[in-house]
Image 1 (cartoon, helix red, strand yellow):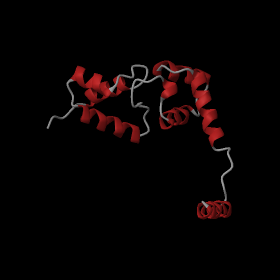
Image 2 (image 1 turned 90 degrees about the horizontal axis):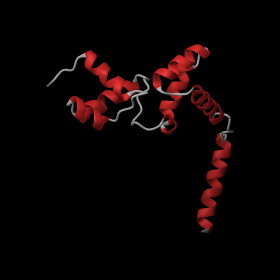
Image 3 (image 1 turned 45 degrees about the vertical axis):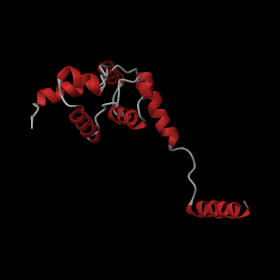
Image 4 (image 1 turned 90 degrees about the vertical axis):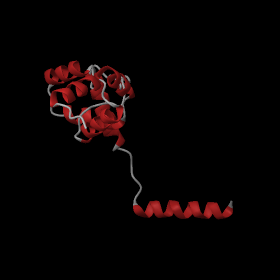
Length: 131
């Protein structure tokens, strides 16, 4: 079993992270590290809350989890800190602001109460019987 140095793993993380956003097959081929190892590392980094997108997609195509991680990381930043963060990761401050607003709007929608949910299920069952 080959052990990889922390510097080697840091290099891989840098290659996967914005603004580089290289995908796993590219990195595997260049560094001769098995793809399953790279996927495992990426999964572990994402579990730690690091922004390591699943591919080299444009940031607007990232998963909701990756976007939300960026919003959380930048929540207390002033304009200068946010600009620096965005430059390092190939993002725009407007994107981060938009993602934050989207996250807030997602929680603004009314949620059904338990009674409303039971009523809805009951009506659904009645409809199914009629059908």
